[in-house]
Amino acid sequence: MTARADQFDGDAGAVCHSLKDAFERDGYVIVPDVLSADVLSRVRAALDPYLRAGPKGRNEFEGRETNRVYALLAKDDVFAELATHPLALAFVERDLGPSCLLSAFLAINLQPGETAQPWHHDDAHISLPRPRRRCGVSVFWAIDPMTEENGATELLPGSHLWGEENPNGALSDEDFSPQARRDGDPGARPDAVKAVMPAGAMMALKGDLWHRGGANLSASSRLILTPQYCAGWARPLENMLLATPPARAAQLSERARELVGYSIHPPFMGYVDGVHPRKTLPR
Image 1: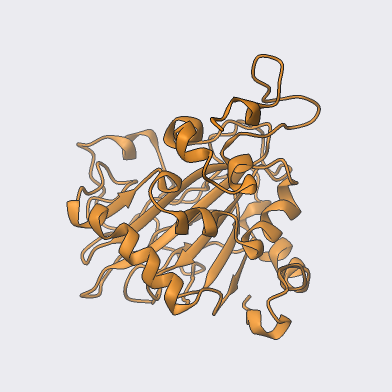
Image 2 (image 1 turned 120 degrees about the vertical axis):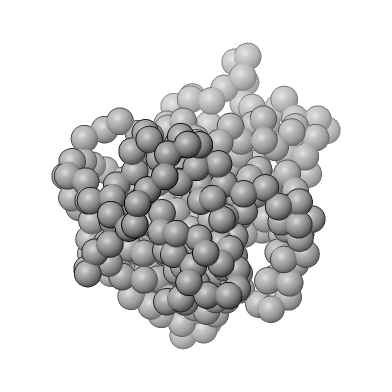
């Protein structure tokens, strides 16, 4: 389901509240026209040297025709702004609470010729039986338009409510092997929905919703950013405390530092030598 942010005068709480039923039913929502052209330009400029360096994915999951840039909080201020964007955090904190952490934050640039990704859900590293309480929320920022042709993320609406069953073409250990190759598209489904959205749009996605990157059949690349968040008690996918050095973390906003891990999950998970971790940062 989609809604225009300007219908709510930029009130993140109102946007989130208006879409809560769709978020619970479908497992995702799309809000267009969130980021300005200036922010999109800043993102592209910040990523340009890393994308030009050009390493591509190492396996079927990362995508052999896809550029991925990790550890974004260490690379430019614009990424911290997006990780703490009030609209993103409205959905994240609704499910995970204020002690949530940033689990991963990366740029994904699908090049022409990329094939469809295996089906997966972003909190699969958390070993709790499905269906389960929310453990993660992912946000997708469309830096380029996501279209039917250029590999828009494909979704299985309502699949966050499924049990332990896996769809055909689901992610397996073999998909992380540099040598393994898939034949055709074993995960093709008539009920899959493509998350078509314009540049500047935001999609919030529950961490247990089955989804995958689509095949890029166009002549142009498709760039998104995806900050992924986890509950404050869970281990993040990327080690944010190492990915964001202390000297860099000290320059971030307080909320960004909390998401990195300079925070406490009640009653005292995350302390350092008996004190709050923010006290370890350089002054």
